[in-house]
Structures are given as C-alpha cells and as structure tokens.
Image (cartoon, rainbow, N blue to C red; front, top):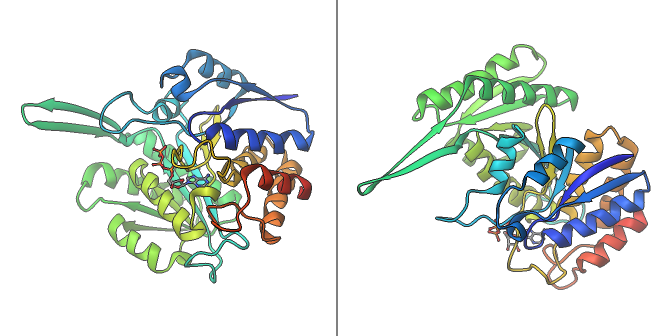
Length: 330
Ligand code: ATP
C-alpha cells in the first residue's frame, strides 16, 4: 500500500483537496492518505511533522497556502521547496475540450519548467537608511541540475524543443550562467533543439504565437510569472493548471493557482487543476493505468460540456457536481 501526505492548505485548498481525494478513493488502488494541517491553520509555519511525513512517504499532494505580501512570514511554499530540495517545478499546459480561450482554435501543448529553489526567490533583503538592498543567488549546481532535469524530462516525453528564457543582457553573470547551463545540458540530447530568448522578447513571442513553443525552461521568478501567463493563454483560467515540484528524493504535487479567497467556501472552485496534479503524481508513482483513468474522466467530463463556473459563469456546475461527473466517467 502506498501512503501519500495530504496538505489541504488555505482558501479553496480544502475544497479542491477533498474533491481530488474522492477521485483517488474511487480508483480503489490501495492508496492511503496521511492528512496534516498546513498553512494558516498552523500559523504559516512549516511544521516538522509535515516534513517528517513527506520524508517518510516521499510524495505529497497539497492545496494552496496564503502568503502575506509586503510583511509577515516567509512563504511556506518557498521553504518547503528549499527544505526538501524540490528543485524542478513542472507545469503542463495543454488545451482542454470545451474550454474556450483566445487560442481555442490552435491546439496548444506547452510544458513550463521552473527552477524552484534559488535564483530571484532565494532573496535576502535588507533595509539600509532609505534603501532596500536585495541580493539573490544562482549556483552552478542549481543551474546545472535544473537544465539536466529539463532535457531528461523533455526526452522522456518525446519533446522536440527546449527554449530557455533569461535576462542575461542585463543580469549578465547569474542569468548568463542559467542560460549556459541549458546549452551544456543540451549537448547530450542532439535530437532536442535548444534555443534561448531574452525574457521580454519571449513574452511577446509567447502571446503572439504560443504554438511555436514546446518545453520552456525558466528561472524561479520568470517561471512563476509565465506559468500564470500560460494558464491564461492555454486555459483562460487557473482552474486547469497542474504542477509538480520534484527533487531527487521527494515530490510534492500542487495546482498552480493560489487560495482564491474571492470564491473560497462557496463550493464553486474548479478542482481540475489539483486532480490533474494528482494525475502527475500517479504517473510519478508508476501507476499509469490509474493516471490515465483520472485523465480520461476529466477529459470526458469536459467533452460532455460539463464545466465549472470559472469556465461558464451561468451554466457552470459546483465543485461537487463536477467531481461526481468525473468519477462516473473514469
Ligand atoms: P493568492 O494570494 O493565494 O495567490 P489570489 O486570489 O491572488 O490568491 P489565485 O488564488 O491564483 O490568486 O486566484 C486568481 C483568480 O483566479 C481569482 O479570481 C480566483 O477566484 C481564480 N481562481 C484561482 N483558482 C481557481 C479555481 N481552482 N477555480 C476557479 N477559480 C479560480
């Protein structure tokens, strides 16, 4: 029996987590769950019990957590990723049936890989007489391992292109090191094309013609921003954007979206993003049939025109109704 650590989190977290657990339980494949309080319920700290549980089970499925901006505590997500060395953040963005966006007529299938443990988010800020001095760190090890991970992952999925984005024309040494690590890793994969784009040009190219991209490798900050851009381009909502945080030993699966306080507690959140994250988790665990079953349930539900309110405000169904529809189609 495989045990998974479950972290419901804040806002819509408990709603989408319980919807996803219903789907996983319906698979009846002997998964068991160890549920831990996380986020505001434990004062925004990263409890040792949570770390112990993930270290023991190796795999976790988590809801979003609240992070105060400006002041308050450091993001618990950032600490979790650093503590467990979950250095690769993988976010697939593929067009969904019956989800209309500006790009619905062009089938899109993009993968964002984001460096997750250093770069602009390993930041130290210091107040000094009317100034704030911020320093961040890129390491050789960090740049190499994310670049190698990206090509290995692209190769495993039969992908043909990797584009690395950066701002090496201005932030020359650190972003230059990040870009160069990608070209170095690419040498082992001559069948995968490696290109690079300066981030401002990349942003313009992405919104003008997203189908030119395949796998995109980003620094921590750019990956955070461009994941949401891809969600908007490909899905028109954050409700379908799934993700995996992967390290050499542990993996934590979570949706791209945040706590969505505007809809929390109303029973209308789209649970697809976390359900699709659980598909990534099942694939990671080698449970391919189970992964396919959940993915098929989600796709058939959408093909049948059953959507949540983020997709169709008037005709959209509730979180529970949508989950029932997925379970009957798995
Ligand atoms: P946080 O501070 O936790 O990041 P946020 O509201 O700033 O929260 P998101 O939670 O990512 O950012 O939400 C952005 C918008 O997308 C909100 O209007 C929210 O309602 C919507 N949204 C996010 N996730 C979902 C979802 N799963 N289903 C429906 N709408 C969603």
